[in-house]
Image (cartoon, rainbow, N blue to C red; front, side):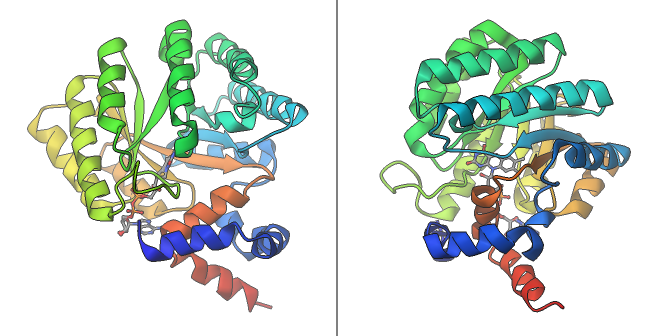
Length: 307
Ligand code: FDA
């Protein structure tokens, strides 16, 4: 992990800094990465993206919830997303973070909430992607996913992070256990110890290409979630060489990041899914975007001086 990324993630944890950004952040630029604070606003953005040929995964922002009522409210928000997608007819599935559903309170509570959400997803023939969070939650997330995957099959999928040493083993387990294991493959966004994750970006990038190739060749569906041209070009060449059809994988990018590239990929005939977050709890998400690309901080500074 780069020094600047580490620094931004550490500073983001500071109470004074977080208080200031939470107060002024939407106005200062968080709106570039967050599709509004309400579901209605988010659905409007999804319609615009769909119009341009992009499909979507909607995410009601929230993570690290330690209160049962809050966890229930987050669960309800997820149910609302699935209903709104159905009612509006937009092309979107859903992503969620299990710490927003009470994972830190108990595994049982989180499972109860996940089952409510997945019952609804199955009823609407939709799909729910479980985002992968920090290392402290990996083992329990894998455990819960195993239970849910057996019960809900094609309606649930997971994210796998290339920066972790354990990743290849986790993927082998998933690929060998399930018939179709739809995985989103990412580099990894959290500040992790060098005892569990590759500390150098070059090693993360190398492991990322390795797991992408592994999953594409496995025949399971792959979602390659990156803004990195090196990786995108590698995938294009790899699928061509191995005759992997375009309906066996998709690219994914975050809302507000490289929008022209997103549309260019659609023009080239690839499926492109945009991760569209919305809601009030945008702070953690927003600071990870700044940490990934400190250049993103410049428009905040610019907005601070705009009249
Ligand atoms: P990286 O940040 O290494 O950037 C590589 C290159 O990409 C840059 O040098 C530049 O050329 C280009 N680039 C990147 N950002 C750009 C920008 N804003 N404008 C122009 N060029 C840019 N993580 C996680 O831990 N758990 C999860 O569940 C998810 N989920 C998720 C979903 C989706 C849809 C995406 C796209 C990402 C995630 N992530 C995630 C985040 C992921 O782990 C990772 O932190 C970011 O995607 C950043 O890594 P990149 O692969 O984009 O490349």
